[in-house]
Image (cartoon, rainbow, N blue to C red):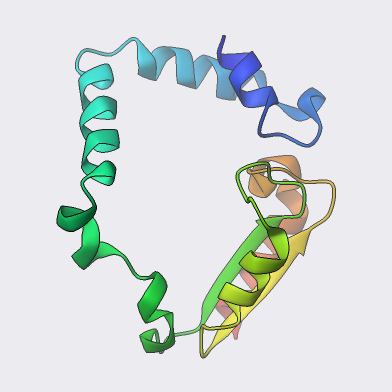
Length: 123
């Protein structure tokens, strides 16, 4: 089940590390994890309670350098072009898109991702 779920968010399901599946299975088996997940989901659905924590309308107020990394084939991004436009609202934002990558570019392209982050931090 964990592998099937992960295969939906990877561009290339053959790149799913077995360690990631084992980590998920171990985490999901811990006491209280299901309740914590359900609480988090319910909390995100409480729009008024979550409103103070939403930043979408306030991206222009983020004044620090910000790295935004997207997988071009991320199935969780409904409109890739919209995501690119939103990222442009960050005054000091840098957007990097990984081709042939789903929701987890740091796992699908670890060397490229790690170098990108190192270079960004050095600036």
